[in-house]
Image (cartoon, rainbow, N blue to C red; front, side):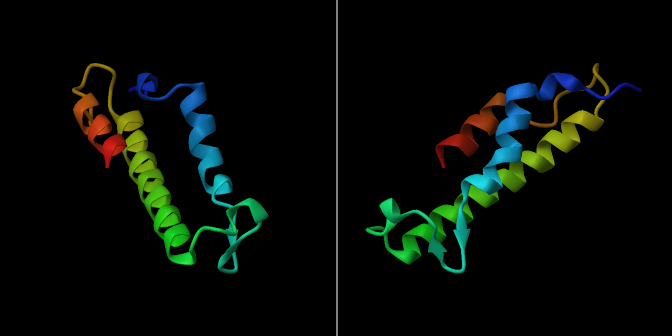
Amino acid sequence: MQPNNNCTDHNNTICISLLPRGCNFRGGEFQDEKYDHIELAEMEKVKNAALDKHSWLEKNVGLCNQQPTYADPVVTIAEVNAQREV
């Protein structure tokens, strides 16, 4: 069986791989001075939300790639849009 490569494209793969690097959070502080005005609790909240979405996306892309091309998709567009809005 061939993996279903319709679930990802080159741009999504790049975005997935860059997400952890986008969270430039080390030692409890962001490394950029332009974020100094944001409270640490808010930074943690955003970081955790981004990592949660990232893990959801990786899990579902992996499941989708395991499916044969003729099978129903693991994730529907409605589920993806619901994840985007939360």
